[in-house]
Image: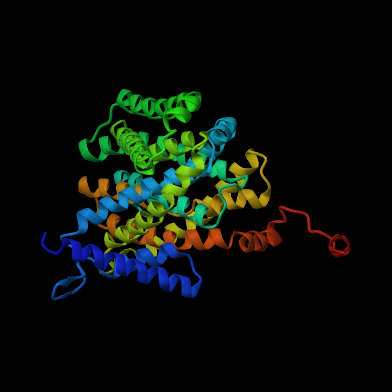
Length: 408
């Protein structure tokens, strides 16, 4: 533990270098954080006191990364509104069902087509279905799209995915780890997760006047301690009832966005979001060993192609079901194409169950490619939609004459 502070300092410098390179190239910052993390780690060399393996500091870096996910989702909740989310409840349920149904079915077909046994096929379907909350949140904030009409559907799908994940992890762990699963236990787990989220949003909205008075604190120090305490307690409690802690953080943000203290909280949380969020993507990169990815390349490329198509189709259908425009609908599928922390969790479950070893490198490479492609496709969503619209003609072309007159 003698060099832990030095290792943390070295990690932060490497993260900063990744950020500087990204700024110079004017490219999404997320892939650079991940690639910098991949370049070091257990397979990297040691130069005297400068240990690029990050063995001693790995647990602390991982913990800071977890905080990063909480701050990213909490901030995203602040930028949004529980009122808008509740009003869109029906369309979100429909959109979320469409998204899960398409992507999960494609994952099952992909595993079956490659000849994997049932357990491995179910793990592959889980890996390819769930989006990365952290990456989606980062992209929405960085591209200033939190006020876009499709954002409430994107947030809703993220929350819908979490309920699905709670149910699916229960089923999968039963099948993979013990060979059986209790239907009653699965239904109870799903009911508790969904009930907690709905109750938190409804009660939280009713409690806004009380929160306004309780948060009327002059001292910034005490105000910050109260907000952070609330955030971590709710996020931590969420984890105990099989709701991802990131979703717990999102719920707190959604409720506090309704209070008169929203701007003060937003200003306070911004530096923590940026710092710990960067550490999360770096720590994620540390878990990927580039030397072990070779055997899963072709399988991964096939899964990536399938996911890109499935996500776009699901996004278009989900958006259209909510009466969104073609462009807004395409943004849904392109924004939530990134895969990350949840896919790795599902892959680790397969490892714990002693399933085929190829699942680990497949998950790592699959997540890496989509973590890079996701932010890039979201940034260039306008161009992607324009190109596809020429083929599928979702929007009627504007005549040159009328366009010219409008400009004039």
